[in-house]
Image 1 (cartoon, rainbow, N blue to C red):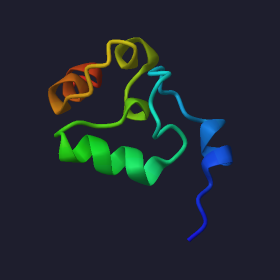
Image 2 (cartoon, rainbow, N blue to C red):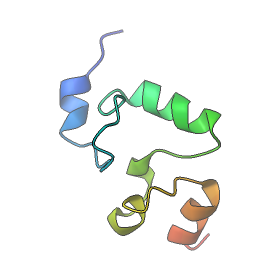
Image 3 (tube, helix red, strand yellow):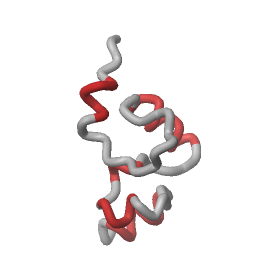
Image 4 (cartoon, rainbow, N blue to C red):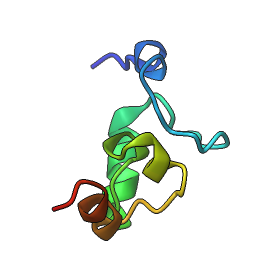
Length: 64
């Protein structure tokens, strides 16, 4: 399968500038799920900037 990194980067909302996984969504998702987290793109911008990617932060952000 061909990676669509260039296309993905146009929509990547992650503000962690030194992340090597930006635009490589499959690696990003795998990394965060292994850490019991979700990627930054799952959060509203104001929450994403806190870098708290926990499931709990996700639930709070979306009032779940």
